[in-house]
Image 1 (tube, rainbow, N blue to C red):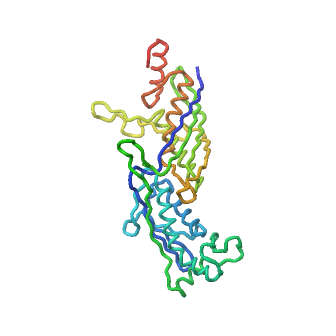
Image 2 (spheres, helix red, strand yellow):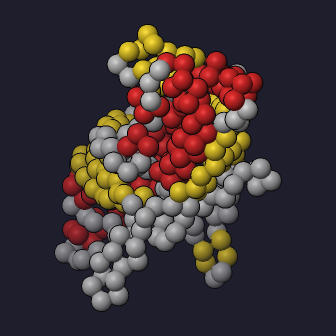
Image 3 (cartoon, helix red, strand yellow):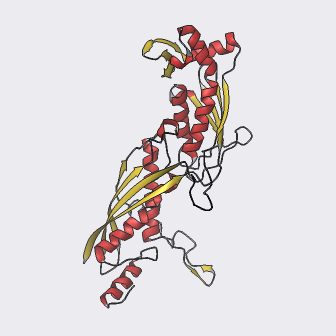
Length: 332
């Protein structure tokens, strides 16, 4: 007999590891208005270089294709705390924002003179600088940058670092600000369990995340779906089996990874609550996306057949043993 069940799990997770963990960046605006950003933040596949380039483009007000990123080369880039603790977008983008704010000052001075308003009344976008509320009164960023080089002899460069303002917990009260921000998520799974074989089929998965402002929706969805696929493997099949000090399944023939056929279409819901202390309200995503997946699947199995699997993964053998124990009145 096949029985269906649904499970829900929620989580909150901190942005940034505990303790000081700064990022730094260099920014240079070329004479043609293009932007070069040097940052030590390492992209390990999560797409952070693309996101940081988008942040940089928005900070200066130029198209994304005008931005060149130099990352992870310690001969050229300044220090970064690393791709750990779901911190890169939150911390590195702030360092980039500060570096660009410094680099663009000469351009804003040129624009201020040309447009006849104080620099604080200027805005930028689409490669132009204009008077706030009067977009027709503008100067192109390439023109302003060129004038910096040829007439003002001021090279528009900037360097900045940023570390989140944190405090260690008070040893007596336990109070303190250990993390600059938090993200939240709820995952919902629907499964079908075969009570004769113990096999579990995942029918539907919904993931709702509050990760602050989403800079790149496609990358964000990719991180969430990838994390769920990992979590489903953790919940249902992946297990390193060791006996007498030897690994019994040291290859991918015996270590059962999930495939695209094992993971259903995933509905992703982004609940954007901007963080007031970060550029454009970004938070983080990274590690948080995998946390609610396993309990959501395990709760769905429990809802379907009434047994709680507490030893991962929930293989067919474990489910059958649990069902047998439950039928005999034993605690599993």
